[in-house]
Image 1 (cartoon, rainbow over the protein chains, first blue to last red):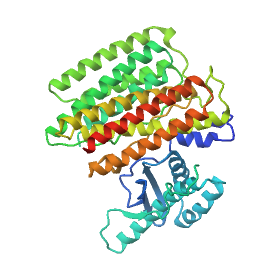
Image 2 (image 1 turned 180 degrees about the horizontal axis):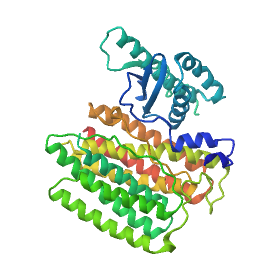
Image 3 (image 1 turned 90 degrees about the vertical axis):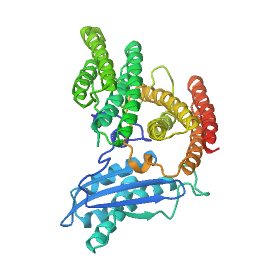
Image 4 (image 1 turned 60 degrees about the vertical axis):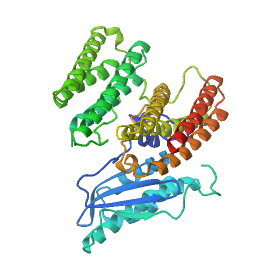
Length: 153
Length: 270
């Protein structure tokens, strides 16, 4: 539907579609690894569910209480890595930076919290493989989008 | 896990968003009243479920369907109401809910009998144009992002406060949660109707339990006050940015309402 809609430069049709209907959003009941990235200052989190099978990301889902930038980036990123292998996923973060183009410092932090939650899910996979008991793996963000010197996005 | 609550939650959303999507003011208003009744059903069901020693959550299977005309929306609603009947409890509450649903079905059947009601739906056309307003593109962009952020936030607040309200034994807390829920219903309705006007109506995304299971009420309230402060700033920035007197006044009005929410939340801390 959105392919035929002419959009202004500010918000593209693709972005609007991700806003209206985020892809891969929610809980993945059969995930075999779960990661959480948390911004302790704002309490914003992203939880990332991954189903890994022989190095292939068979399925993913994510959820967040964050802003719309986080939702859109999570939607785009999860679409990009789904049904691809881990090598591709590792490169996908760089590809996402290209895709997103010039971002404000706040948007960069929104992107990082999404990527970090995915990385946390892979860490959870490794830990479980090593025999550790871990329901999910939590990584705390170094930067917060509420930092004092953060300009408004 | 009891499914009656999940199904009612989904139906509440469906009735609400049918109301927001339809332009006919009479149908919109009537459906919104039914949505409010459905929300009370949710509240009563949640209370019954907890009293019986069971539990519920906010998981749901709700997808955004961009329907083209009023009858498509109404027919989908009819199907959903018919399907939900099997999930209601066989008690006085279940009986009450079923009679409410039957009356809603009767109302929907009346709408379907009049072909002139079958207007085109513009709420999902993504055009982002407000016909009687002359807003510059940067203002439309700012408004778009604000509406997506805040419509989710109001939905989140309704559900989080309802989750805490049904579990508190403190009457003051109970009443404050009710006030905050009522206020957020009004904000959600206002923002969602604006999204429909712009052609970007969307169902807020599902809440994860990390958001609504609150272990430390005081900390939750303090964080909530910080969020209300941020929402006030957003309203003020939007009011300043939007060069439309009517909309600007509306966002000032919302801004002052947020100020009183902070007062209400402070009472929860004392």
